Image (tube, rainbow, N blue to C red; front, side, top):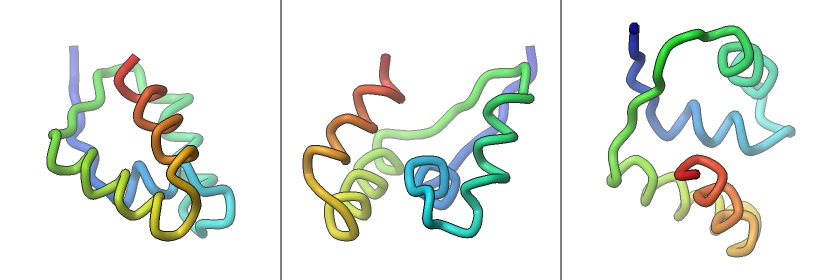
Length: 68
């Protein structure tokens, strides 16, 4: 099984439909047959960014989606 490292820019683009990279992130997630890897630091950074540019509830929902 292949795996790819994903960082904050990928997660943020995936979560934010207004982000220019959203279509590419969505397509990658749909088409990629491997495993996505990240770190708790990246998740914390993404949650912080989502909270700052959106809502805390949205950030929590996104983290639940990724972790489950």
